[in-house]
Length: 306
Image (cartoon, rainbow, N blue to C red; front, side):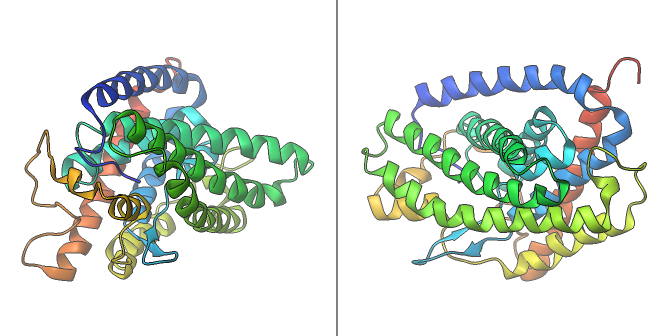
């Protein structure tokens, strides 16, 4: 769902950019009370994992693929939607700058859709469902899975509205984006629920609440390396939901209108001339950068008395 340059108009790009910037500044302040330096490794690992997981496009239907957005997962693992928004925004910024995934001028729209709308819809719906389910921790993966699926659809609707306001597509883009992202949302829900089920049993220290101190780096680091360096090679080559809709509705070529270009040898998650090895190296480098940036953010936003 990464919007490229050319899909949103300058006014829409400017408005969403300002909203996202204000949101990130506010989130940084609120995260000071919600997220301390003690959990800095978890913010870094979560950000690196979501970056790696987003490299894996899974097929859905009709020659379309999707990938994890991760907003609900990030908010729950970090125990704070504010920290979750910072996590997803970090991933999106690094993807746009280092990997040319998502337009630079569309970065505000992408952050608004995925780092704020996606995160907050997933977080609030998870809390609501948890109360309806009686508050059982055993049912958290189910609640989060449902919420994650819905959050993808809501983020897709927001994206479609931005395309309509930009004059890029007609109102027909709304049902098109909604339909394909319902299928992608199912994949999002299954992945989110599966990851939380594993963490609850094997690594409760990586979840907020009644956990011990962070127990070690080996398992999460190995997991990130496997996903970024190996499983990323199995990603579907089919276009993602937004690309497929753009092809079907005839505005895909607008994505070639690059307004701001950042030269990078890692465009499209690869290194020219290295083939599969280049994809693995790009994934590992991206995950490492995500971890370093997120870890640094955790230090900056830590409570003053920490």
